[in-house]
Image (spheres, rainbow, N blue to C red):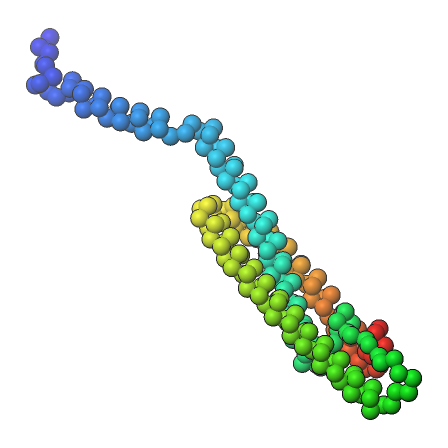
Length: 193
């Protein structure tokens, strides 16, 4: 049999560098969380993501409602109509009211109502601007979670919910516009109907 060579001669039996590397690998492995903890962290992150999407959905619904409020109120101004809920019905308590006085009176009340509508539009616009900022901030938080598959799934669900919600608001606003248009067509807008 051949003579066994020493570590110095072959380098094969020199395990010092191998041992050093093994220690580095073990230190790296043990510095990480165990697999069960990583799964829990992933689950927790996905639950956190879902909670953020619930909040995002709520904010987007509020923003949609403000947008439709603003758009509808602007439409009322274009039509020179006051919606039922904003009509001011006040009559002077004189016994003998001539048509000129009533016309002047109604003109003043209508112009006041239109001024109030403009105030409501400005208020809703300020709220909507704040909502848009909150939405952008929350969307950035969601993006930073770096869970693309779960994010896509939640976006799809939210998009479906918001589409239905928007149709609901649109139908509700349309019914009110038609109702108020009928009031004006039938001269019932002065009766407080």
